[in-house]
Length: 599
Image (cartoon, rainbow, N blue to C red):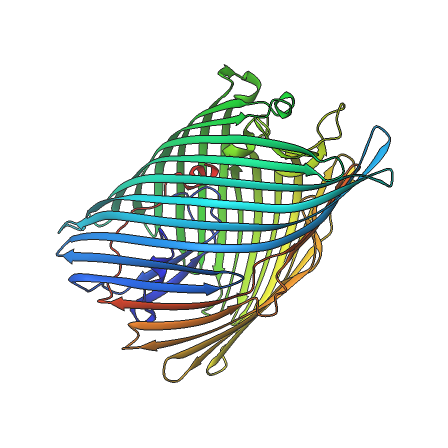
């Protein structure tokens, strides 16, 4: 699946089977936990086919998006194109407090703000696919995404120092940003002698980002004004390729392959305020990374037992430059060996279980390892951490299913996972910094679900617990979160489908942050016309407006509380038209997907 429209274009009557792969092999990304594999019936549809869709949303403001997916098929050749335009506006209300101690004085900061976010996105995609008479295929596409964004934060704040009000201010932030991304991808897939498969995927990505940031701080009690203007520029380039060979050995499948990539990420931050530049200076960051991986796996099925054994070796060569000077301490060379093993047992067609262990490497986002700082107000800066280490994730999972019941238990250990904390930035000024650090954490999650089919009604009830153990700076952050959901699908005559969902969670720790309890109700009704070619969908999201964000964080002497009255309740009207349905024959797969996410 390259995007969600590929799922939307598949009719249920065109599906042959659906397979859930709980322990995917090495041909997928190393940290992929599960795969849903949908096999369709023999595709039909010479000539033009496609999907047209329009959606309107009503929140505190109105939004809309329109999209079209068109495919032309002649024999083994497919030429396809996609276009999307989206315009959204959101308005949210924030309030919070920040308390800390500096030079034996107690600082209590109170703030509130109104945030307006105007977001626009336009997307274009063109490509082709060709299936040769011998079953081999190849294809390529070009993908462009542009996203201008206008952000405004109008806020007020007053400060108490040792219980006395010292400053009252208006703190307004304006940001205009423009991003653009270009992706070119190609693939080749060949089947030889009905048992050998050779597959190649290649990707080239180039993206750029330009931010203009203006902060105005007006001190009401002194009539003093501070204007901070800053600019962010960023360009990223990625070259990636993946080649693997698969062959059948008895009732098993053997895979061997390589996945390699080269990344160049260039970031520049320019601070124009001379006073602020004494502690938030202009800076340049350049990241260069070469990644080379080899992987192999063997999947064997014997009677009711299936076993998969995989191994991935990866070498990463990373160079980090700060203001054109290489930082050797932040330029590591890493070797890693990641095993993957799973065992499944199907007792009968209604009962099965599986046990798996998987190790993977998760590297931090490139924005998280920058050395540059960003001015966020008179008492706060935000930054990255060039010394942030990759995280090693070891995961052991057990799954048991019987008829409509399913039980899942998972234990994981995360070495050097990243946590975002707020702490003192300087011993000279009462300024805090919000940035990432490394910490070790292990966690346990379990869930139990029941999904029967009762005539026209299919309910699904799930309860679960997420519990982790994390210590940082002598503090423990171990409070569990209980999750629950009750989802319902009603399939009615005359092609009506109604869904009603209740989801929620209790208060608990997400890393060092305590998330406050939250719950919401979503309702939708869908009606199909013209033999399911035309669909009209009405949805009411967060009906009672309870899906608001609230959290609190206390690390050492710094305490932060925040409540967000978000723009979560909305009404959606979606109209889509599907003509001459034909499933995609494109066999290209994701390559360096995690590296793209890091960018």
